[in-house]
Amino acid sequence: MDVGSRINPLLTLEYMQTEHENKYFDRKSGQIRVAELASHISAFANADGGTLVIGISDKKRTLEGINSCGNEKIYEFINAPKECCRPMPRYREEFIDITNENGKSDRVLLLHIEPSIDQVIRTSSDRTYLRIGDKSKEMLGENLRNLEYAKGSRHFEDEINQYAAIEDLDEELINAYKKRIGAEKVETHQVLAARGFIRKRGGDEYLTNAAVLLFANNIMKFNMNCRVRFIRIDGREMQVGANYNVVKDKSIDEPILRLVDAAKAYITDQLRVFTRQEHGSGRFVESPELPEFPWVEGIINAVAHRDYAASGQFIKISMFDDRLEIESPGRFPDIVTADNISYTRFSRNKTISRVMTEFEWVRELNEGVKKIYSDMAEADLPEPEYIETPNTVKLILRNNIDERTAHRNKVSNEALNEALNEALNDDEQIIVEMIRLSPKASQMEIVQKAGFSRAKVQRIMKKLVENKVIYREGAKKNGVWKVYGG
Image (cartoon, rainbow, N blue to C red; front, side, top):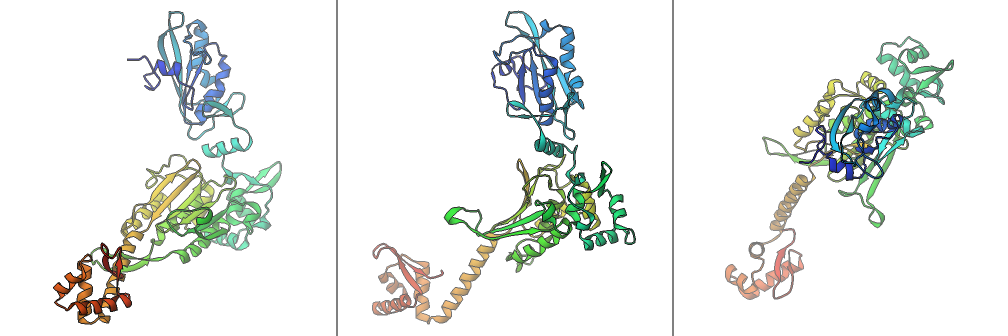
């Protein structure tokens, strides 16, 4: 068995010496300065974790070992995450015994860096890195801000908006909010300041992004991302070019406290009425293709928990023949996953979620997601699907179009047959039924089975063809007779 890590069995000595460096693995010579490890430790911690292997040349990939470095430097290597990064990431050290390139007993040191869930890990020189592929890249500007948002060490909703003033807020929404919190007689500035919607910087006061997103009179003036785009597709997949099949494309631009109502009103008019079979009675009844609560709650959750810092992104609702998709910018916040979303609660936008709760939009204790599942089950529809992509979270709600289509065709054929039978005389009905049962029967076989003369059969069949009751499919010799609609 190959010598390797006990903590991560993938890291055999052969792997560490021969494999290319990647997102989770980097090798360094024992001659490296301790301070130079800081960027890689920060990068691994801010990504998905990884292992630094010290004692293998990163250029020649030779087994140098670390014993020649001396105990003091080895001790510094072990403490590098503690001494070179702020805050200190969680990590474990591990030694592996080797025979170095000179044939002597030696060791390599592995620093297993764990991912930081809710903190950005910086170097002691206040620089921030992220592991991307096989590189540790410094994060600057917008990239750094997005990393901070993702880690929860910075919240877009709490940052100041330098361009908005109280006069830019919707007075009707502000008054509705004051009524909700029992502060109708309190001056607006005092309410906003007390609730954290006003922040000070350099002696000046500013509204926060949350205040603008929730209450702005003209949201597009301050935040182009606060919108829902509804797209209706004719079919089950979106096509492009000559086959482009989008039949509706509507943008709904409103502050958060109007956005849900506006989206709900528009989409309600787009939903179709489907036929489904009731449990127990077996009766076919008409109902909306989706129960209301699941898709409305899906929109509410998208509005409350989306990543508002994601530049140029919006909530997209796509309506296909067989499903409704609600796609929200940003990945699942913190500990929430597609597997535990039905019983795990965490809010990316705590201030926005609190206000939406006060307006009775957002349900506490994750009751809303639970009810999405239960309402879909009660309607005999497939279980909701949550899918996380690199930049979004998508909720898929499937309807019963296949069941509905099968039933519709059955009802349609029954009605057609009933109408057809009423229009035919007894002899004609006999011929039609024989064709249904034996489409390959020859005219002579029909004569024999029906007990009619050949001339009578020919006359009846000619009339049935002219009246578009039956038709011939295929060649005259090898073809078959068929009944329209049957």
